[in-house]
Amino acid sequence: MQKLAIFGGTFDPVHWGHLLIAKMALTQLHLEQIIWIPSKNPPHKQAALFEHRVAMLDIATKNNPAFTVSLIERECSGTSYSINTLIDLSAFYPNTHWYWIIGLDAFQTLPRWYRGYELAQMCDWLIAPRQVGGETIAQTESICNQVEKKFREKSHTINWQLLHTPLVRVSSSIIRELCRQGCSIDDLVPKSVGLYIATHNLYTHNSE
Image (tube, rainbow, N blue to C red; front, side, top):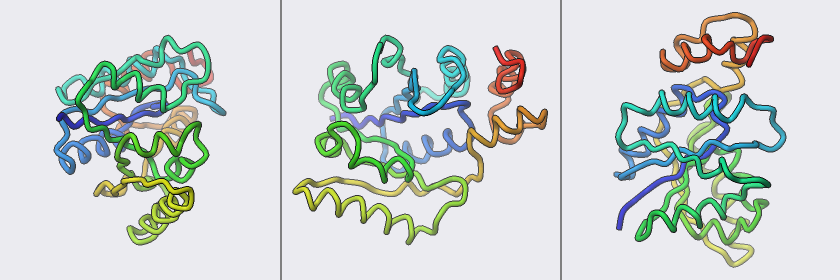
């Protein structure tokens, strides 16, 4: 049985923190592949065009054969639910043990997701610590244990583990703000991504 992981998000833009998390997941879990899934219409956010975010993901991941960018959400006309994404992917990748890479903040909300209790048992969860203003390992584990308790109270189980990643103090929101201020982001994103952002005037007042 192959071991694959889903890494979903807005990726607005993808940065070194995202790439480090993915590489550590590959190593820690001995995964065959990580499937990156950019969200088409992220709720409560105004993001760069889907095509731009996909293009940046493509150029950031192209040199790693274990990374695949999926456009599964491109044809989604309404709300895209995570459980439907996993069901659809399972049809393309049968005989798979699934993992889901998720940030600590999002993991805390999992009990409130659409069919979240059902989804929780369909894969193992790989928790990435907060990259900005992060807690200690003990605090992070305590938060995850609280989430697990909520599932147990509903007679459900959930398998999770922390990713052993160094804390990278970078976020997409910080990068967007630096771009608006005309500051350098050279150390925060791959050079090719930085060039794409500059070429298309992304995250400035003259954004495409």
